[in-house]
Image 1 (cartoon, helix red, strand yellow):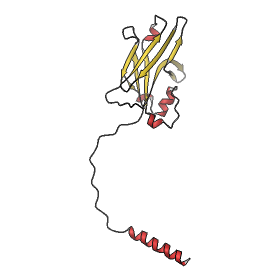
Image 2 (cartoon, rainbow, N blue to C red; image 1 turned 180 degrees about the horizontal axis):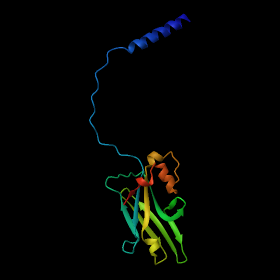
Image 3 (cartoon, rainbow, N blue to C red; image 1 turned 180 degrees about the vertical axis):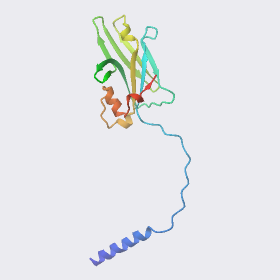
Length: 176
């Protein structure tokens, strides 16, 4: 027992005596570098008209100051309707693709994307589209960094769930 006590006493003296001594010179400040890119998600909003002249499609190009990666997830939502509630007007967003079945045929709002742009388009078998189906259509394009959200469960079909998971509000959506 005395041997263990002596051994612990010698170890504690060695540890505490090693912590003393003069303070070293201060280190040099590093040079300022470029700001890193944020991996936070971003949502863009755009309102478009689909016409025969534009082939019932529109191309949304990301702003020059925005960078998207191959691993990012892109979702597009259409403003489907606005509902009057006690708290005011409530926007109802639906994830694309959205298909509308009519007696005359089928209308589908769809999209594809790359790291440079998002193409939103209408595919239809109706023949004559009505202005309500083609004019002043509002879309929200959500860019979700997959690396940050790979372990989170996000309901990508629910726009409000995506907005909440990105810690964004309606005020932070970039409108074009």
